[in-house]
Each structure stands twice: as C-alpha cells, then as structure tokens.
Image (cartoon, one colour):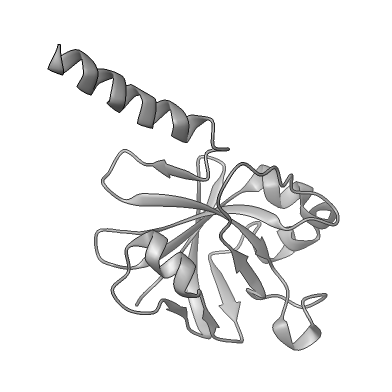
Length: 156
C-alpha cells in the first residue's frame, strides 16, 4: 500500500509539471532546463534595436507566450556540468521572432558578439541552482547549430 501511495505521489508531481506549461523541465542529464523569454535587442536602445540580451524573463505558472512579431523569443537556459550557462534557441522560434529579423545574427555564424554585460537576476539564479549571481559578460562567444537549435555557452 505504501508503494502504491508513493507511486501516485510521484506520478502526480510529474504530471503537474507537464500541465504547468512546461516552464521547468528536466533534460536527459541532471541539469535543470528553464524555459525563458528573451528580448534580443540592446539595452542602450531601450530594447528596440541592435543585438544583445535586453531581457531574459523567467516566469512561473501556466502562461502562453507565443513567439511572434511583438512578443519575446522563447529559449531554454541551464548550467552544464562545468557550471557554464547555456542558452538554446530553436531556429523555428527565431524565424517567428520579429519576422525573422534576428536570424542575421545566427544563421551561418560560428560566434555572437555581445556589447553589454547582462545579469540574469536572482529568480533565474535560484531556479538554475546557481551559488553566485549569473552574469553574461560582454564579449565574443562560440555559437553552434545542431538539431534545429542555436546554442551559446557563457563561462561563469
């Protein structure tokens, strides 16, 4: 009977994460993968032009934020086994985001250049299990493309 109750509790926890808009999911590795919303413009332009991380927003609860001309871009973030921050963006979402205008920074590129530092914030830091504030520093970073996803890795 105890095993049955435990099984029901575990299944309940798993199914509730599926119905929560998949805001938090677990990858094949023990890393925690967080779904976020990104504005890919420069903060110096009030988030309306240029390229950079103007806003990375972690939200909780059931929310529907489709990528589109006026919405922010969907992405995933996690800390890899080396403690580096990884940002993954689906090419299909980049095509939807602002009519695909940001693809110029990704398609056929092997690096991205960020001109401004960006601090993730305490909510994302805690959700990712970081022990110190996570900051994406200005600089040039390797960009890879595999399986329909662009991936950027930021040392911490």
